[in-house]
Length: 339
Length: 164
Image 1: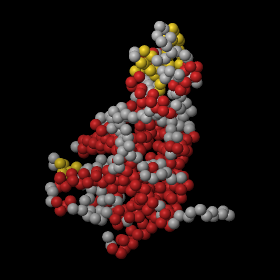
Image 2: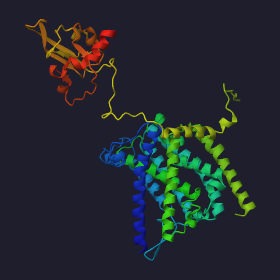
Image 3: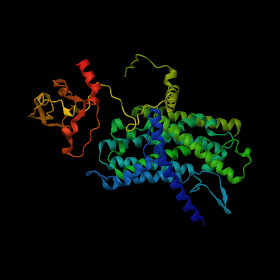
Image 4: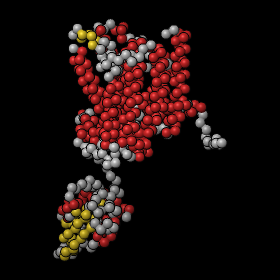
């Protein structure tokens, strides 16, 4: 029976993720248009709702071009790595507390890993290989530069990301994401308790997902298309999917670790029955994720790109010390208030 | 030893923190989310060109006939060699008319020289800019496509009389 539930959960998770990615692209195009005083896609479907599915369909029918000088194996392996990693990290993120259905105790997570945070950090690090290998395997100077930049950037920002997460772990005393979320019940949100850690984590998440103030791996004006210059058709679509899936994972992680996940302070005062409460919590969580995603998009269309040396000095000289300060602050909180 | 170069305008500490400036910028973009939009929904809502607009050249048709007297000046002046005229005699007062008048729209550069040089106000730049063709033969506009009644070109003719 467990296997059946696991399979159902996998199907649902992948379907939800793909649906969210498709409409995240639409969402981003709409918001970018509004910010620039345009209307955005509004021709395909109702108000442009079918624009993204149409684009995916178009990518299916495009010719798949592999450069003659490219390493064919690495060239086709790289997008697979990127996409797989993006989907794997999604499996350990829970969307709600355990739910009682048909006499079964169902966990609302695909794989309830005890070391959930470590799992995510480890796999997002592997994600670097996808981009770096694509840069190397295409045998193109722009791709190579993009891949190099991405590996340097992700390694530098992983440090401050990891150290800011340590602050969360110290308070919650667990690596399991559901434990961390349940610890933040009420107003004990980590964003309020450790604002510095929240900021460093969000900045590092932007750098990890290659979003705009730090999107140097694909900086269009300098590197043509960056690491995916030589990709077309479905392989390009895989990189595209992976980028947006990473964005969703990052925002899910931000809302889980710092914004209290599915906790809303007054839910238990409403006196709903357990199943309804959990449904309410799931909606809360998704709304929080959507808000963070909106923030991601909003930042992308507001802030210009960093220069490469500015990026590195920000990562090593500002973000790392700040996350260490946050660590001391959390230790101080624990020592003084015994929380 | 590197020399510390003082900038013309040093940033204050408040500006060096970046965060307040970033917040300012983000609030600006947020305001634009709900601001008025400038997009024109093209095929439905069209651009109203001023009379000075130079679209595709057309032949003026008056009383069911072209004004053109087939002097060939437009063909002579055309820098892209897009116009071809063949003259034939007629019983009318103007004595000559073109039995063949072709403009190759793949060559035309919309410079308006033909219009400027025409002594009879017979070739005029219209406001039509939607030119699509799928074959080379379709791109050569003959008299059937070029003749346009004079009533629809009034604005441009008045503009020319005023400013030429």
